Every structure is written in C-alpha cells, then in structure tokens.
Image (cartoon, rainbow, N blue to C red; front, side):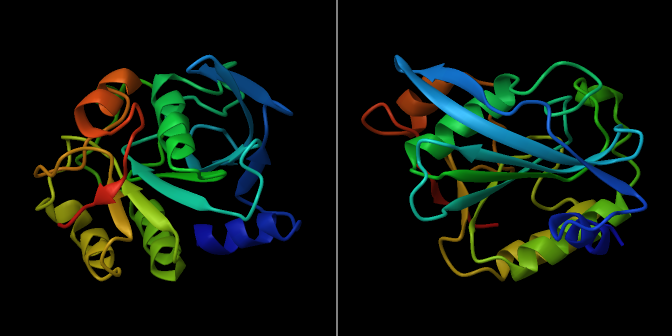
Length: 214
C-alpha cells in the first residue's frame, strides 16, 4: 500500500517502491511586487513517472503550521527530476491562493498519479485504484482544509470517484472548499489567471476559499 510506504519515508525509513525527491533548497516566485520563498519535495515511484504527493512550504508564513490540502487531476512535471520544473502555472496559482489565505504549507494530491503535463494523454478510463485508496486514507484522517480543484473531466456524479466523494461529503461543513463559484465540478486553478481568480471570485485583490458542497 502506498500509504505505508509514504509513512516509512516520512519517518526517515527506506521504501521499496517510493522515493522522496527535492529539486531545490528554495525557490522564489513574485506576487504583487513581493517575493514568496518556497521549499518543496515530492513523493514519486522509482521511475519518477508517478507522483503521489507534493509538499510545498511557504517560508514567510512560518508561524503556527497551517496546511492546505489540494486535490487536482494529475501531476504535471512540477517537482520532478524528469524536467527542471518546480512551479508551473497551476502550482504558482495554488501557492498564491494559499498565500492569500495565510497558509504556510500545501499538500498537493491528485485523482491520478501519472506524471503528464498534457492531461489529454492520460487514460482516465482506468481507475487509479492504488492512488485513490491512498487519497481516501489521507482525507479520512485529516482535519486540514481541503481545496477540491480537479476540473471538468470529473463531474461530481462520476462513478469512478464516488467513494472519494463520499469521504468528502462526510467531512464537517466548511472543511471542503473551492476558490470559485459552485458548479457541478470543482474548478481547476491552472486554466485561468490568478488575477481573474481574485477579481471574479475573491475580494480586495485576494483569492477567497469558500465552502464546497457536493
């Protein structure tokens, strides 16, 4: 099980299936004329073609730990040694949304673990069972806010993710959130600009996280 292998890595033990990889000691992105300093690491399979987990720390917000879990569709090459890419447009927008809401830690999860920047190349007809079991266990245990953001390919009534939806439906009111307005799927942050997110869905030039109900 992925979750057991992940726990081994988090405890400093070795894993037979997964590797913990960090590309940079730190990285900076610019937002509203200010630098945001980030540190990250990812959990991959040995071939680095599946990513199960990406952890990002926002260094300036280093007071009490405040983690935002984000569930998207599938990983691009962010954090991977396959390509010198840490923060693509999607990750940049996620960081800025989290920063607007004073989070200092982000945990990126995905419905599918296959690393592929062009999502149309991923075979979404096959259920990523191992990854979904991993997701369910993480979500069942957490009290952190959960930003759902996987986009239009999986509507809320899709049978392939019905068990995951049930877990999210059982979370306390307000724990599952969106950065956008309520529609029949959680909006993806990589398809639009952060300026549009803040202007259309936010307030005072900041993104706002709102409760999302399935």
